Image (tube, rainbow, N blue to C red):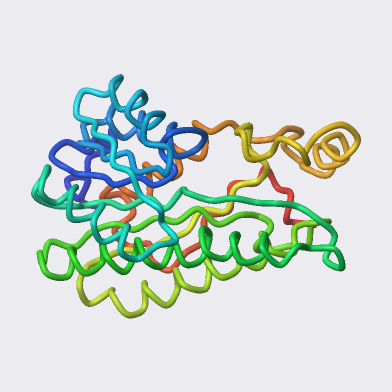
Amino acid sequence: MNEDLFDTTFRLDGKTAVITGAASGIGLATAQLFAEKGASVALLDLHLAQAQQAAEGLEYGTAVEVNVGDSESVRKAVAEVREKFGKIDILVNSAGIGPVEWAEDYPEEDWHRTMSVNVNGMFFMSQQVGREMIAAQRGGKIISLASQAGLVAIDRHVAYSASKAAVISITKSLAHEWGKHHIQVNAISPTATYTPLIAGYWEGAIKEEAIRNTPAGRFAEPGEIAAAALFLASGAANMITGANLVVDGGYTIH
């Protein structure tokens, strides 16, 4: 094997990364890790003040406000990143929401909101950044956060599960279409991860049962998911596209 094919320290020097949902949770952990590895990072989030505070701690970080479910907001945000950094090499779609309720009682407004952020947002961001990458003819990496809930049934997760299954499917379609442009498109499916998103469901007896059913015996930390994203963003993953990297401690192997 030619070890000069990629940097085994997974450095991202000279790369520009766009990360949505970057003000907290997995998105923030990913932004911090990518910056540590040398990337210039645009932290995109609906909560601009929180994203600005996070960006202040990064050497080459900037915050950009975006509503990922609004295609015009996405267009403006991507244009702002391009104007500041001149290019986009990596996109991480981390923005997501997950209202929970039994299917028979699931509110219509929560269904539409979940699909808007998790599905439309993932596609609008990928489409707009993909256009930039295709025009630049330098290839690129697009990584989207799916979930174990996109692979197995979980109580009260009907909308979230549907949205994350869609993320996995869209990932495959984009990988198929954009391979000729040297753009690798992949998904990551984490287990429950210690972020604000799991509050209100993965607690008490539900949490204890889930951990009993997880061979690793615990939930994930945001940094572990960020590390998976770093691998997929690096040259080491140039032969991986259309994949769904499951980081669930074995939860879905039953």
